Length: 139
Image (cartoon, rainbow, N blue to C red; front, side, top):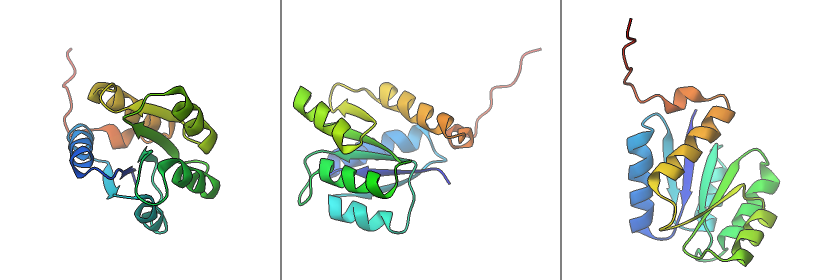
């Protein structure tokens, strides 16, 4: 299975991120959580390949949730998403176990899509990236 979890408290941002991923990667299953507790509950029954995690969440913040997730499953890729591109946040994200850091508004959909492709390719899940359309070979 090819699976991404979006953990974001803004319904608008969550929706736009989901739509971008679904359009580019129709074979990837996408789940959503609006806070850290909901994300942890979803992880009881699922095993995502990739998690996009907001830092500022109601209840536990994204860094606390990332640390809990990585302690339970070190193989999952966690990407921090934040509106605040400050060095302290980047350092804290890495200390919590995040593998990457994107700033909302600065990271474009092409950059995020390229990252998603690289994660699934590194995991040997290229089938997740196929969109159903093949370019015919030219003789």
